[in-house]
Image (cartoon, rainbow over all chains, first blue to last red; front, side, top):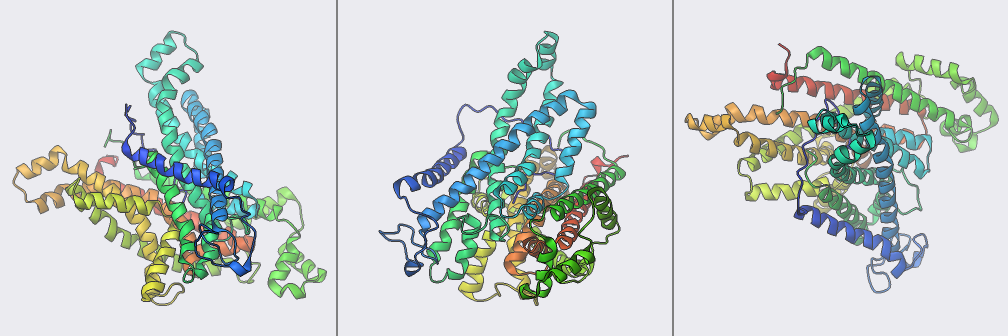
Length: 280
Length: 319
C-alpha cells in the first residue's frame, strides 16, 4: 500500500520537537531493521547457495541442519530465496526513497521560495500525480513495461516524491515568513546560507520520517504487485511472489509460507517504528 | 484545531472536478503510451487471445489490426484516443470482445458492495475501540490497541487476507476461502479490508478522544454536572468524528489499493480483479476503463468526505 499521498487540503506539519535522547520506539525499530538487513546481507556470505537451483527430490523439506529454513515446492533453498527477496525489496525501496527525496525537497523549497507561477505549476504537477491512487499508477507503469524492475522503481518514486514536496513546501513557507529568516535576508545572506542554517535543520528530521514510511509503502507495493503476478516475475525471489507460490503447499509446509510473511512483517514494522510518531 | 479556515462548498467541488479531469488525462495518456509501447505485434497477441494460439495466422492478425485500427500516426491517434475517452467509448475488451462499459457496470456493483461492507465494518470496529481507549489513556485497552494497530499496519492487505484464509477457511473450515455468491463469500474480503482501515481509524479516534477529553469545554461539561454519557454524546462525539472522517478520506487511497489486491486474492469479480487480469493480458481497453472508474471512485469518495467534514464542523463553512 502506498498511502503516502495525502489528498485534500495540506495538513500543516506538526513541529518536530528537538529530542536529546532517541525514543525507545525508534530504538526497537532500528534493532529490528538491523537484524533484517544483517540477515539479508550476511546470508550469501555465510551460506552461499543459488536461490534458483532446483532439486525436486528435496521439495518442501522441513528446516534442518542441511537447510536451515527448509526448501520450497521446487526444492530451492528457502534461506537463499528469502535473503535474496529481502535484498531486492530493501534495495528497490531505498533507491525509490532516495530518488523521490531529492527532487521532492528541492522542488518544495523552490515552490515556497519563488511563489507565484512557479509555485502554482509545481503544485499542479503534484496534483497530477496525486489524482490517481499510487498503486494504480505503479500498476499502469508495470503494464507499460512488463517484466522490468525499472518500471516499479520509476512508478514508486513518482508516487513518493509528492509527500516530500508537500511537507517541504509547507515548512518552508512558514519558515520564510519567520523573523529569523527575514533578519538573515536583511543581513544580505544568500539562499545557500538560509537553506543550510534555517531550512535544513527543520526539514532534515522530517525526511527520515517520510522516508521510513515511504520505504515501508514501497516494500508493501512491490510485494502486492508480486502477489497479483504483475510485478517481479518468477523465478526471481520476491516476498509477495513467494507467498503466492507457497500458498498451495501451506498444509504440508506451513513453515515455508510463514517465512516471507514474517519477513515482510518485521521489515514494515521496523520501518514504521523508525519513522517515529504516527503518521497521523 | 488551528486557525479556522473558511472553505465554501463550490471551491471543494471545483477542486474535485479538476482532480477528476486530471484522472481522465493521466489514465488516457498512460494507456495511450501503453498501446504504443506494447512489445511485439499486438494484433497477433490479441488474435491469440481471441481465437487460441493454434488458430493465429497473419490473416487473423490483419483482421484484428483493421478492426481495432492499430495502424495510423501519433498525434491524430492521441486526439482520437481522448475523443473516445471523453465520450466514455472505451471500446470492447480485446479478450472477451464484450463492450468494456457493460463489463464495468457489472463489476462496479460488486466492488461498491465490497467497499461499502468494508467501510461499515471498519466504522463498527475502529472508532468505538479507539474512543474507549482514549477515554482511559494508558490503560490496558489503550496499550493493547496500540500493539494490535501497529501490528496490523505492518501487514499488507493481501497478507492479512492470506492469514484469514489460513486461519478461518482452512483452519476452522467455516467460511469459503474465495468465490462469489452468498453473504458468506463477502465476510472474509470485507473483514480483510476493514481490519486495515479500522487499525488506522482506531488510532485517529483514540488520539482525538484524548485531546477532546482534556479540553476545557469537556471539563466544563462535567463541572456542569452532566453525566459521563451525556457529556460524551453532547461534546465528545462530534468533535472526535471530525478527524476520523477527515482521515477516512486519506484511507480511501488504501481502500482503492486494497480492493485491487484483495479482490484478486478472494476471486471477487470486481473492478480491481478485472484491472489486474487486464494488465496481465494487456487488454488496454479494459485497463483504461477500470483505471478510469477506480480513479473517479476515489475522487468521488474524497468529495463526499470533504462535504461530510464541512457538515460536521460548521466552523469551516463560509458564512
